[in-house]
Length: 312
Image (cartoon, rainbow, N blue to C red; front, side, top):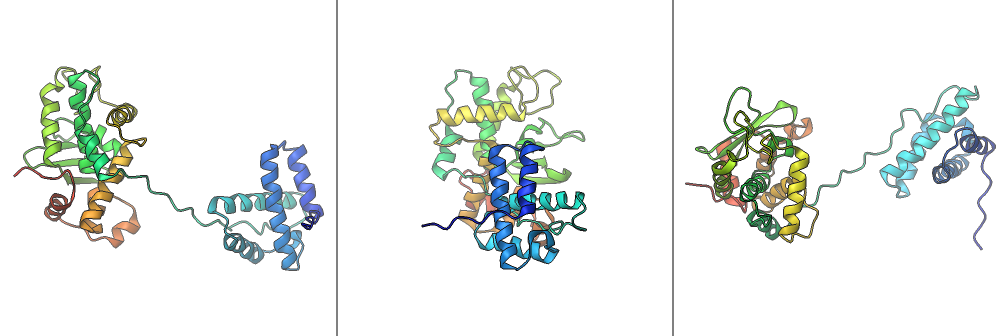
């Protein structure tokens, strides 16, 4: 027979009732709180203290025990939030002088990397000939895929590209130098190589762009109405194109950026070059990775990326 759980401490019971009656907390949330309070009571009993008399060192130790028991960072954060609210309630009633859970934080949850396409699926998507019957939009969409996958651009960097370089241009493509110059996060500029398939696709798009673009529109990529393409429009067109190409994944722009990085890393193993090509801007990364010159980046790209094969 499974032993019956002991009744909750009087303070915890009163707070749970306060949440149910006065705060009108939903039953599902109330169950989560009750589970957190039972853990708190168990830890307190093992430490020979009552929950009301817990100190900061107790709260830190109990948070570590939650982690040792295998709780995910999000679940630990929820438990700590419930505990923090309990002690805040005690403090408002004048029953404790300080909240022992203040300053206790859950471990950071690891950010899962977005899924990458296989090389075969990525190349199939880039090589796919669209079937919507509009040759102009097909040329534009093929160029978009080639730049996202072939250059690892962020969606904002792609939509920010202009036809020509200029002081007001967020980004542009230098065809003669086979390079894309973009403005990334933190207003940080970087240059990345552009492979031969992307340059070919760019040439095909520029040849028909004027059919839809307004005369004074500087954007490289425009909608059928002639104005700069938005991020949501790119996502929608990419999703449809992936379905047409038979790619068995929900494809979005960042997936192509991650595929670019994954495939380049698999082939080259050069973490520093990939870091530079992606334009990551966090301090920890810039401290670890050495800044590489553009010539070296071009060599790594040419040798490793499936869509390189740059023009000679």
